[in-house]
Structures are given as structure tokens and as C-alpha cells.
Length: 412
Ligand SMILES: *Cc1c(COP(=O)(O)O)cnc(C)c1O
Image (cartoon, rainbow, N blue to C red; front, side):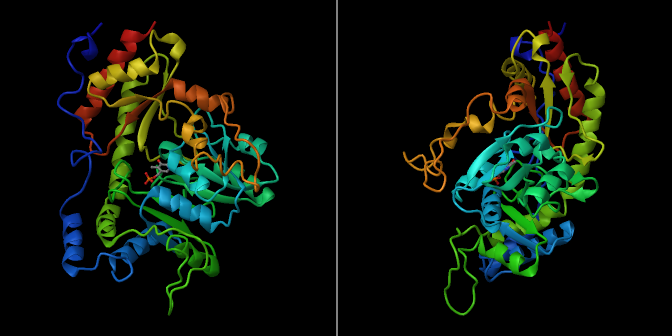
């Protein structure tokens, strides 16, 4: 058996893998520079007077075939804008996935709504429609689905439930640029779609986000107000309801316009790389490789492996450490435990226990262990690998060698 790098052996990865942290794994170059230079030279950095945010929004809306797109300062801002847009009241319940980025949950809490967590499907790790049904109460107002890692949620049953119970559906597409469900783009199936352009996503503006909707005109216009202090920007200063300032700047949008033209190529390359890696390690024992359901177009922001931990001498935490020593950035789980187990869920506003303790709600939060068994199991069994469109064939061969070496070494 080959000596692991963690025990002083030779590292599986020759050189360094491309990374989302810098230009090794990001496609940022002349076109971004040219557009940013235009903005700087113009002296107009705000969306109010410039053309770049308008163009970025128009390009995105056209790519997605939707009527309205509002660019925001982050994915979290996009989600909060969406939660504001769908008219939830303080104390309303919003059902979301037990495995997601905290941005999804922050968006709910910042509108004083109550996050309720549904369990996930073991194969795709996306929200389980059956558990959504079980979690619905007379206070449920909306569902935020999360297309995790780039794989879409099973939208037909979710939209069916939403229709029956008259719930709004927000799609968190922060990890799912160009993801499709049955040939339809994720983000255009529910009422609102939210995206992120943070540094680690498919394309980036450093930080940034966008919200899209196909709602009717009256509603569509409201979307911008939700990211612009409720300000209709007519003759005088007016503020129609409570909303933060979540504008994207012209500088971000300049980068975004150029990045958007590279998105399809990035997704194609990520898919090709995944297919190659999967073909190289599919015979490794007791690991489950990422699935793409027959109805899905997976865009692979990450490559997540589920480990049959009973068959290994060590935990996913040790496996991740060994892989990282081989030059393959890996983590035990996307999250170490489901999102409802984080302290932030309890410690929201000072010591107040708001919004749970508010008179509009008045229940203690019940985010206890055992709430979502699949999610709890997945967090213990998942090996999370960062992924990149700039991996070469040699890189993929090395990743395969590293995974095989580590898995065989620690297998019982
Ligand atoms: C990244 C991410 C967010 C938050 O986006 P930011 O731009 O980091 O605020 C929300 N949801 C999911 C699923 C994400 O991956």
C-alpha cells in the first residue's frame, strides 16, 4: 500500500491545484479590467447614474428569460430582498433546508420570520418534499428551497405542495448557476430566484448577488424597492416600507458583465471534470459518488462524496485531513452539523430570544438534535471537495490517485 502524504509519503497532487481563492482557479482577466477601467474613468460608481448594473441585470434577465432582475451586494442580500418581497409578517414560518449556507437563514431571521427546517434527501442532499409536508403549520407562509452543490431540488412535488397550501417559493440558487430541473432553469420555477457572486461560486464579482422574478408588473417593480430602502426614486424622497440598501456597485457589475460571458464554459468544464473523476474512482469501495438524477442538470459547484463510515478505521474528519495533505482541499461535510444546530439560531438579537419570543410568535425555538435525521447523518458521512473549472486532466488523475490512496489505506 502506498505511503500517505500525511505519514511522510509523496503527495498525490503534483504542484498545486487551481483554487477559487485566486487567479489559478478564476477566469478574471482583460475584459473585466477593461470594463472596470471604464467605470473608474467615468467617475460614476453608483447604479443610480451608471449603465453597468443596468446592463448586468438585463444580461442576466435575458439569460434566464425573466422580466425582472435586481442586482444586490451579496447572495444573502438577494435572499433577504426575496423574503421581504414575498410579504411575510413577523412570526410567519418559512420552511427551508437543514443543509444550507447561513445566508439562507439570516435572510429569514432579518425579516423576523421563523426558520423551520425540513430534512434532506440522502442521495442529492436537497430538501425532501415529504418532510416539507410534515413541517407545514397554519403559520407557514413560504418555502426556501436550496439547490445544493449545483443539483436541483425535486421541484414538481414542492410546487404542488406550495399551490395546495398557497405558499410562496423562493429558490436559493447561490450554488446553482445554470442548474436545470426537467429542462427549466433553477430560479425560474418558484416565485423568486436568488443567486450569489461571492468569490467561491461559479462566477464572481468578489461579493454580489441577484434576484429574479417573472411576477406581474406591479410586483416586479416592488422587487427593486426591497433592495433600495423602499424608495421609488420619483420626485422627492419617499420610503414605502422597511428595506435595507443592498445595491450592487458599478464596479462589481463591470466584473459581472464579463464574468457572465464565461459562465457556460465554466459549467461545461466542471461537468466534464466531474465525469472524468467519477469514472476513475467509481470502483473505490464504500464511498458514494455524486449523483445526477435523470431530471437534473447538475452544475457541480462542489464534489461531495458520502462515505460508508462503518467500513473505515477513521472519521471523515481524518479522511479530509489525509486528502488535504495529498494536496486535495477537503472538509468533513459541507457543514459539521445541520444548520439548525448553530448557536446563531438561538442568539439572534442580543439576549432577547427574538423573533421566537415575540408576541407574534411566542414559542421557543425547537432546533434540537434528532430534528432532521438524514441531514445529521449526511454531515457525519460527507467528504466535501472544492471543485474547479480550471482543473486539467492531469489534476483529475492526481485527485483520483489521492482519493484511492487515502480510501484504501483507511478501509477496514
Ligand atoms: C453562498 C451561499 C449563500 C450566501 O451568499 P453570499 O453571497 O455569501 O451572501 C446563500 N445560500 C447558499 C446555498 C450559498 O451557497
